[in-house]
Image (cartoon, rainbow, N blue to C red; front, side, top):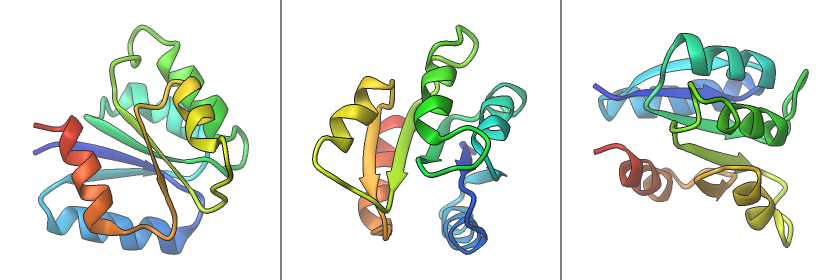
Amino acid sequence: MAKILIVEDNEMNRDMLSRRLERKGFDVVMAEDGQQGVDMSKSENPDLILMDLGLPVMDGWQATSTIKGDIDTQNIPVIVLTAHAMAGDREKALESGADEYDTKPIEFKRLLGKINQFIT
């Protein structure tokens, strides 16, 4: 069973996404801020990370860059999620090290397709 780390500060978003992923057979762990996400990327060794960008303590841009800059976690695929999609955000996310980008509100079928590209 593949493990997904959700890094999301909004409780409703965490709850909705985790329940839907668990129904699809994924093991889900959750972090509420960017620093916790970085820490859990090491302690939980997830197969994939779903990273919100607007996070407290450390934003998703910096958390993604930190995870991708660490030899222990650099190979974990990161899909960044944002509700504030603006021109250039996808490129900026990929430059920060993210492997994929998606927008909120989450279209679950589309997101699941992106997840399955990385988890086989």
